[in-house]
Image 1 (cartoon, one colour):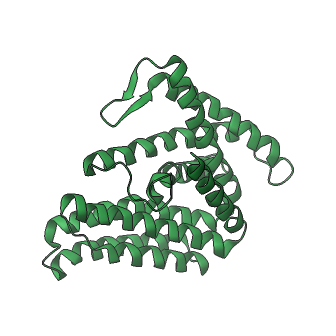
Image 2 (cartoon, one colour):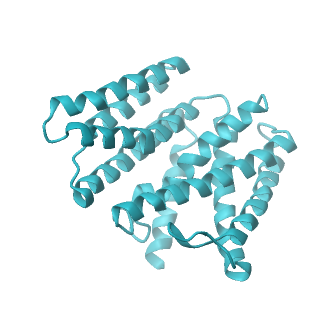
Length: 264
């Protein structure tokens, strides 16, 4: 437990230092994306004996960082993603050890976690990055905490027993409802900085927490498929990078598009 707490404090300090500044914020999510992609690719190789073109993911994320720093338009991001899809498929032609199956798994890793990480890079240079990350960080944490406590107290029905046996429907509902409190907190604090209307704020908090729960289950599904407890041992007491950002990779884009839908 002590090691877990120390690791959490170190991660929080790194985020606190990097998030306020544009370049460090963009680079932070670029590094998160590269490490997460590496963890998934190395597990494909070790657990399934399937070699993938990991270089495609690294190049894709590196270029996304460049596009963000140079303030390119949104079409450049999607154009580069389309080209990366072509690179992933072409990798099966270039290398005999990859072939069709490796190319398909490269495409899978490009879709997750590389693309959500690229979305976070894009969000980092957008005009609503503060609101998005305030809700995307806080709402899933509140949701997870109360989902755990609510599940322990009231949980009777398993949410996804074959994927995450400890999660319950009751806990998930309680966590989602309590995440609205995170929206209230963000709304209250934002009045002194970048005001967010009350309704959009609490709706976005709920959407972000729900997306975060889906992200958590999605990564658990992958780990079940791969037969591993953690994607790596990079972070003492927490597992791998992908184990820590699985909720964020879903919550941040969901929060961004929710705020966008409200015209914010």
